Length: 99
Image 1 (cartoon, rainbow, N blue to C red):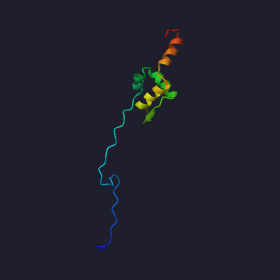
Image 2: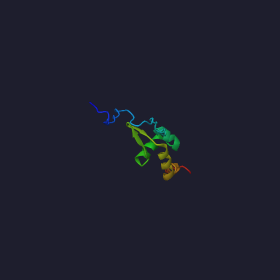
Image 3: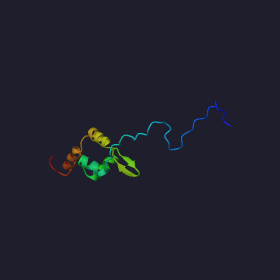
Image 4: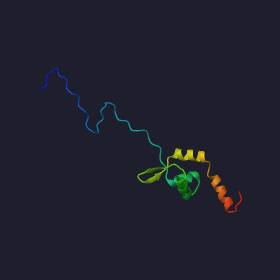
């Protein structure tokens, strides 16, 4: 029997219940991830170039085995590695074309 002056232990919340009286707040929306074709469109190159760039440092993430790109990472990569125009210029020179 519990005595009237005795303190009772606080109940611990069940799993999945919010222990605080504050309402749960949804996290801020996450920026949309890009597909490989969207990155190719942004950089104005072929899909093959994007696959090659991935091997050489283009940042990407795997989401359940699918390759996705964080838009800001792609923009930073393009800014730090120069535009793809240099790549196209080298290709034109190799093929004997004019710049």
